[in-house]
Image 1 (cartoon, helix red, strand yellow):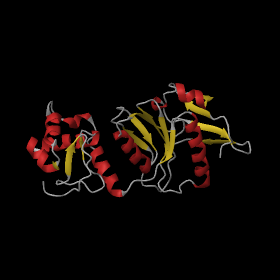
Image 2: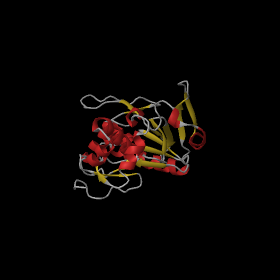
Image 3: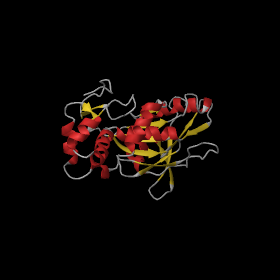
Image 4: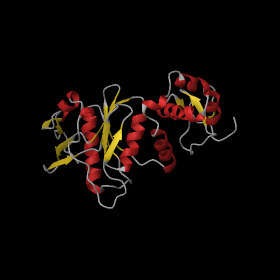
Length: 253
């Protein structure tokens, strides 16, 4: 736990890779953390099926360091969010003194910049109790540090398996190349102005081999919407941007 008025400090790497330590309140106002490399590498844990890697962000067109499968899932969620403009993995370490005067530090896994200039620091535990008491104490300190500068901190719980599977499928079509030939996206959006089964709207535009990648690209970017709590399939109801997607899926159109 941070002492009241504990005076948080930020440690990060400048654009040429040199470490910088600065008062947290100043750094939060002036540093573009979304553009920085990780201040420390994600650990590679023997025995885990998924280790550190890179996520290509459709929001920024750049790679973001990811340390775990749980973090990659949350990067997918934030990469689709229309109010997110920047993403980074472990760009800052926070230092503070606890109530006994001892120096503590923590590196949040994820940084997201919002369109209004505020930001999110987050950790992505694979289970609620991951990290033990140290992580819980750090979370309390991170929440205080972020509140001090008008930001937010979250320990983001894992998503259920079905939404994760749907996000992973749509993520495969996030790259701009899947928008297809000129005019195809406009035709796809028009085809789903009235919510209808995915395959019906697709076939109304043209050959599914050409059209489906554009449909999935539009679903990733929010030009089209559907519920993600049930598995995606050819009869799932899809609507154009602004439709809630909360109608039960799977029925005939």
